[in-house]
Image (cartoon, rainbow, N blue to C red; front, side):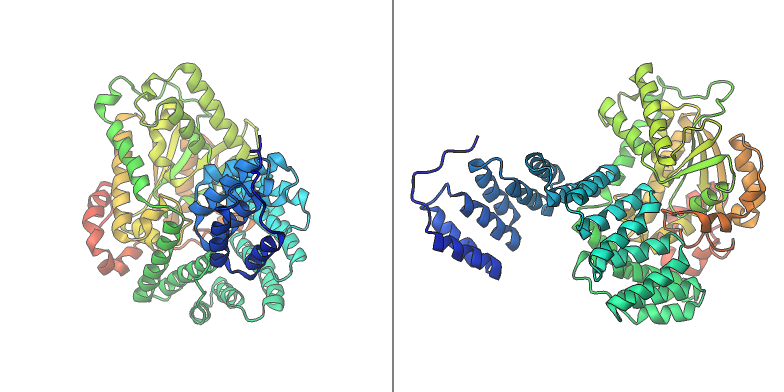
Length: 584
């Protein structure tokens, strides 16, 4: 119920108009000062509280904005625009739960409130809830069909969802509504690059150039295309001729991409000093972007350490996970390994088999772990006590989510879940699926760590550990220590596949994998380049590499960077010896 209006005299209409004039002119500090004075005489004047909230929002005083908007809503609880503005203030503070509540209140009051639907989509997108975000953006478009920003954002989340057929369509729709809309041009070009649509990329770049002129984005993609055409020297010249302004989020990400591309270009030109310099600069920028998002690597390390503390012999003595006699043919199969160890390459090769479907970096295990956390207090102590019905329900939950990602329920197909760092959740996986099979990709530890450092990743708590060689090596040691505990304590079904063996003898490596998962040989698996080119999307950082011929140059690359790696080699050497790799 709205608060009863004060009997105090309302502010003069001319005064109110002058306040709106200050807002339109951008004089927010003066506006805030004048409203605060007026509120002494008019403490329950709705327009003063809402306008003061708007001033604080523009000044970046988000806590003060929240207080003002709440005061306004105490007077008029069904003020949809103030609920939306309150949500924006929470969003700026990265308070996603509070922001989501405010936006839901706004659309609950006004279901045709396009901006509130759009903002709710942003909340879901920041939580990586792609389906929910897509639904919100669709509702924003339904309410306002000419909403270019909503089309652009919908395309981006559909990309994440793997619904690639509609991605270019919605970027195109955004550009048809606003031809000079830079974010949509930028996103469209990036999408076409990662989707391996090179001819479409060339055409789209030219169309963008007709609108944006000699913009850095246009020159950047000239360098990208030169790199794709294997003119590495020209690519370096073009990429070094520009620098993106890092004053906003898009500029930061574009500069991050430019630096990351130059790392790979310098590496191919055997300029190791240049590659490491660009890697250092790219990682510094990535770290700043992560910090701005509130993302740090320490939380991920804590999660791994929690599992290392739990999965010890004394805790496992009453919980033995051993395969039953006669393994279930359709036991879940997982491709895991440390990032940059060849999982994308193996994934692409296996996709050539007509009876194999692979879910790339899907969230089925994450969903399973979240549900297990609620069932076992997040600290894992109750895992041994899960009831059979709970285990069955969680298994169905996982399979339903995997089928959703793969868009199939065909039981004749072999479904494989490929997400590298699912290796840290092997304990939870085995609690639900004791006969699960793990295809574990190995690569020389120094090559893996170096490659993670030299690669630009999406900002996540796990990837935040790759901004220095020291942190990357520490994470490697941590997660492999956990994996060794799983291996020694849980009776796992594991096939180790070395990246170096794949590039040396692809057929032999493939046959060993197929034998492990009880699948027949198929010669199309040897046509991995064709498979990669025909894939709608490759989600990992290796998207522009698996379309190339197999080469052994990346194996042993660490030796060219030995001086830079010297501080972390003592951490990695024990693992190299364990896996049979030389440190010479």
